[in-house]
Amino acid sequence: MTRTTVEFGQLRERVALDPQELPAAMYRQNRYRYTTRQEEEDAKNFRCFSCSFGCSSFMAIVGVYLLTASNYHNTKSEELVTYNHGVEEWTSDYGPQFNATSWSLTVDGFPITLVPLSKEDPLPKDGAEDDTLSYTPLKFTLPSVVPVPPNSQKDSSASEEPKAPLNTTGATVSNVTDLMRPREALLTVYDGVETHQIALPSTPLLRKVVKRTAGWKMCRYQEAGYYSGRSHTCTTYGVLESMCVKVSKSVASGAWELNTTYGGSGCNPRSSWRMFAWRRARAPTNGGLPKLPAVETDRIFANTVVKSAYDPRILALNITNGKLVFAQGQAEELATGLVLIIIGAVCMVPACFLAVPTFQAWRARRKRMQYYQSGGDSGDDDIGDEWYG
Image (cartoon, rainbow, N blue to C red; front, top):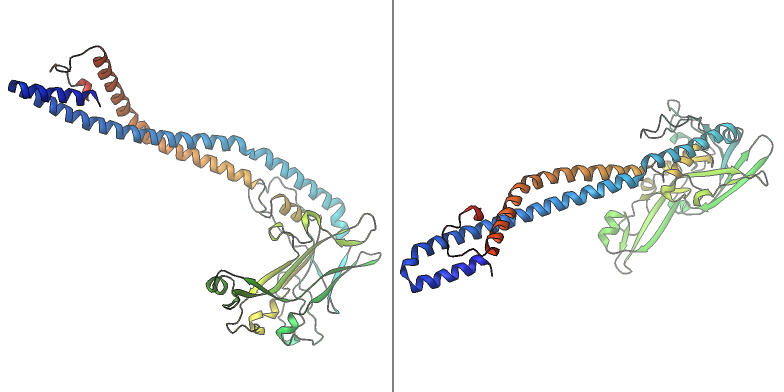
């Protein structure tokens, strides 16, 4: 119970004993109401001040911590040094070695020659392009490995990139079942001295995956599959769209082989270094196999690439985890820290405005406490209003 409440109770007893105390009691009552409202307002200001000051201080502290802990510049410098060292090795050793080779891909007995391509694959402009060394890239590529009729081939004379000739033996894909048959693939390389062959994993051009699912909507609209209500399974189809493999020459045997550095023979960490990439083909609503137009056979193996394991772009993909932005994690921490500091500064503005009335209310409460502790008479009418706002 507050001192003001006790004081008002005593005044009520005085009025009951002596009616002449009524004016003083009314004055005390009005002052009590005013003091109560003022204390409520002061408490509200104090809560707002505390919340604003606490949030702004917390965000500023976290922001400063992220700025100091990000270590952005050192991390970026280390990654650039590693990348530039790889570019130097590529330019002096691995690039000329890979350039002296010729490659072909054989699928089901049909050989197709891969075409060398030196199109530049620049890094994103993240502020590091001026610090990276330039190099001449090299990869071997072809547009497709699925045999198609000669009259279905498109004119590639206007293309910016050289195109490997399609198989023109007259063989065609006549049904979807043939696409689901596992295909044997073989890479053949000639390095100017001898010929090496690299067996690739056999894989179908169209694969069928059956798995359990939570419901038909997820199966139908998110995975383009066929939902079986009896078994609660979703049947999806994937078309082999592209293949990218990285190869290297063995130091011990001198033979070319698939390179499994970084965890796989593929070219990108964002696909877990898998060499095959698949796209979805919508499953028919009757549960049957997709039709050939839905499979789009002209897009099967539409992008097939053979790269050296020492290609600087593969090194950059590994360093940046597929994002091709050096020290991106540290840059995000740095940006987050700056944003938190700015938000903290903005939140500090209302705290500054509320600091003055909060301090005045604290000083008024302190004066009242000093008055009561000094033995002031609560019945005195000349206490003054300075202690009550």
